[in-house]
Amino acid sequence: MEHTPLISVIIPNYDHAEFLRQRIETVLNQTYSHIEVIILDDASSDGSVSIIKEYVSHPLVKIVSLNERNSGSPFLQWKKGVGLATGDWVWIAESDDHADPHFLEEMVNSVTGNSTVGLAYCDSYIVNDKVVTAHTFAGIKNARYSCSRWSSNHMNNGIRELEDYVLMAGIIHNTSAAIFRRSVLLKVNPFDIPMRYLGDKYAFVKTLSESDVSYVAKPLNFYRNPFTKKPKDLPLSNFYEQFLIFDWVKRHVPEINDRKFLNAFRTNTRNSLIRNWNWAKLLIYGRLLKINPLLMARCLAYNLVTAINSRLY
Image 1 (cartoon, rainbow, N blue to C red):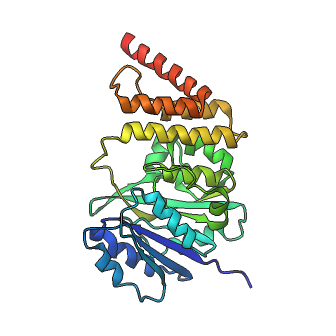
Image 2 (cartoon, helix red, strand yellow):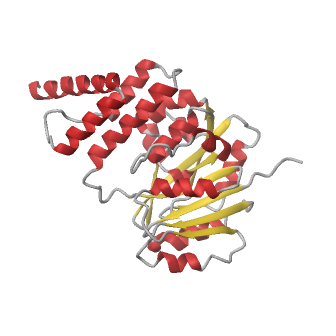
Image 3 (cartoon, rainbow, N blue to C red):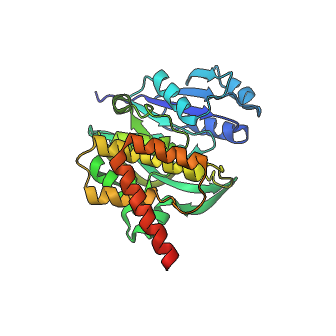
């Protein structure tokens, strides 16, 4: 008899009471029911806890954990959830998104019999506030790359996926659309570096460095666009965390094509050397120079040339 994979569904919540019940219900009503649900709350102040408590006794809810103090990072909640999980696969179902009832069934079917796959993801509809738009990530990516790659199911070698797509553009746009093989997550440990904004990309990168990827072309995930209000520190923090990700790849994934690596690195670490200098920026540059002097020197040289050219032309 073929093994039926247990899926650990981690729902990390912080102040998403408005969307939380829809998220939980679309997890509990999946057509694939061999799941354990772990609900985490990071000290919400908006009534989320009262909603979560409604589900404590549900037979599929294994653990409810409520933080008394906010952790300061969603990825610390991810780490906590993975540590509590016992399933074969992990689905981090972010609390402001929701799913088609066939999401898990389709995802499990896509990885059944493929022992080299450690990450599977599907297409997503984009939700603006509470309105489900007709836009999907497949359409955006196909237009960007002038192809039809994301219109059909496919598999790819993890390293090739990294160098051709993930490092450059982060083509897995939403963690809620993905499932991870738990044994691979535990092996690569994507929580060893504190991240505030790009912990999802870091998790994808480290997972794909050790396993292959499967893609399901159906839009089975509903991604709520969170970028209506961008944090003021996002540009500098994004630069810093992108550098750390590329530094890790350079040190640990020698198979990556160097030209493709550098092209993706330059694209993701553009940060003018001419404008907006402050102490925070100076400290970040100094810290990164100590972490990887050669990579930082390449970054500085590229940014300097880019800045000079932009002023000349």
